[in-house]
Length: 230
Image (cartoon, rainbow, N blue to C red):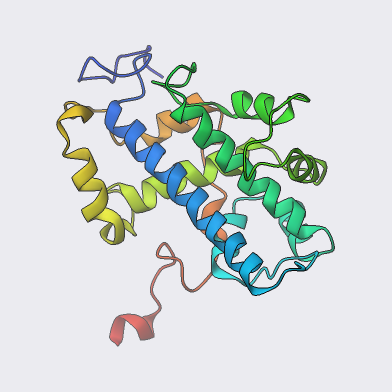
């Protein structure tokens, strides 16, 4: 790989690789994933006061987010204690969101890595910040969870939903195009769509775990002959 900053053409990339527009996509993706996950929990809380110990894994929102979890962890969501594990997973998204929105924090201009987030959620003295519950985070981590699936989800959904490289871009394009059209976002850069570089810098594997979810409905699944003819 070329040296740091060699792909930056706007001269404003954080540490030479994270452009303002890419960061905006990642921040929007983080907020979207957190709010969607939180809405599921709110709906579940409204439906019944005594939550089941396991989750309905067939729920679309759970299925989409949970697809990024390692299979052994994902399987535990529908088992007793699965609700606490999923709440811990949602808390990881909230943790990332808090880190990037802290204007005085070290990630105010950059973006937290897998190692950064793992260290934060593992901190024994981590303060509770609704709806983050250290008990749920502990349940998630004890089940084998880490920061990696949440960050994978954020980056992959940013690519698929919030960039012209994605097959689901048309759904959110009006919103993200309006955001990126703001004067404070800066000039366009060669790093604006360099998701491979982002994955490397954040400590993610080259390939996402996401493409396997919701088979038959994911926009990345190829059309069948019947669908093409229809």
